[in-house]
Length: 503
Image 1 (cartoon, rainbow, N blue to C red):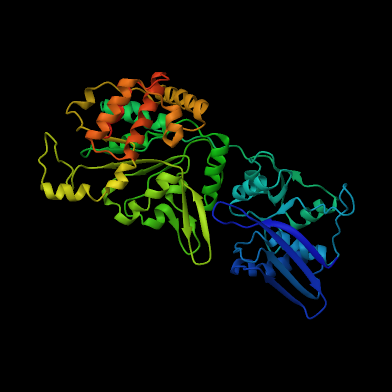
Image 2: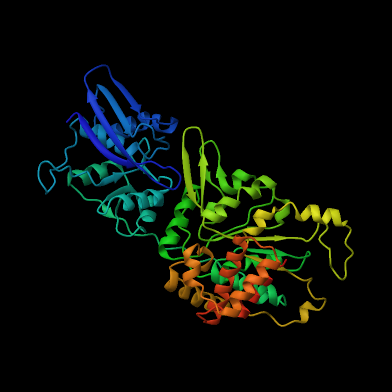
């Protein structure tokens, strides 16, 4: 055989498109050429592959070697193509032969095998980046695919259901596997890490209205904005939101872990929803993703979790406006001259801000030093369209002077039980949280009593609310009814939802 065709995977955002690794050996002066829009790391594979083959006890063929990575218009990067390139050289030179498939001589036994792994000079396999993204892409495209990865990466990829993952340590082991001499061991999933201890809501004394809004936000997946003076408990409440959220489903946990692996974070995140709280100096690219080689931003790293922006008006206007589209669509598209990538970004948005630059406007015990114009200009840093996309607006009063004598609040565990039951009710009814209801789903899932319908119409008319704000109030009312166990949205549920649009 002078031509070997194997399969690997590239990375394009969170997707992992298939790549055909075609290795051809011909007579001529010894050369080793890699074509197919290969980046520097891939072109450097020639030296790693040569040394790994020699140090594994094989001969490096003398001749003209051409490796084509197809499709040619898809950018290839990193060293994950080392393994299929090295095996392709051995197959094309005839040093390795693969027994015929059971289906007949016309069937290629390596058709459904995907290989990815970086080689050291000794022939040892080095872990690859984003193994979960590679595994998810392989499982999505092929029902009966097999994946060969370095052992550490294979333990992460083995979490993907319906995919057989083989764990390899060296090039020699992979050769023994494909020739049938010694099959590789099937990778076992690495155990999920123990969830980190989360702060409890019992630490928050007082602020009953804000606690209720936090429970509504958790139960329906709603976005939340808290406005109040310094020390009112805004950040404290936001940091306790993950403790009352339901655990991630296995599919969502894998998606969140796959995105984390794209940023270089090792291991799997488990079923605990991610919580991201970037500093207000973060740029638009840091929030939504970007760079010459696009990487996921904070909104994607918060996928299926919480994105908390403290001191909201202190973020740049450009960064905040970049959040508007992902809040609606649940994804972000990053376009560059050579490519366009998409990252999922279905996150729960939580923000906090002061009522004015000094923070004390309306406080009974502190004098505000800001003029009305300064306070108005400060609030205007967050645009109307951005505020319109937030479901719950909560004004927090100052902490009581004797707050230390107040009893502890209800613990997170008790609230979480109600939230989990409410989410289960929503999933059984429409398959997703109430915050994701759109279009005809609102009509089908939000039956209202006649008085409730009239109250919603009158209230939204007096508030001059947009259609988007009306829909968001209706979703919040649906969540309030679900927490009460009611199928029909009552007048009290509409009244509660409307009050979160008044601030």
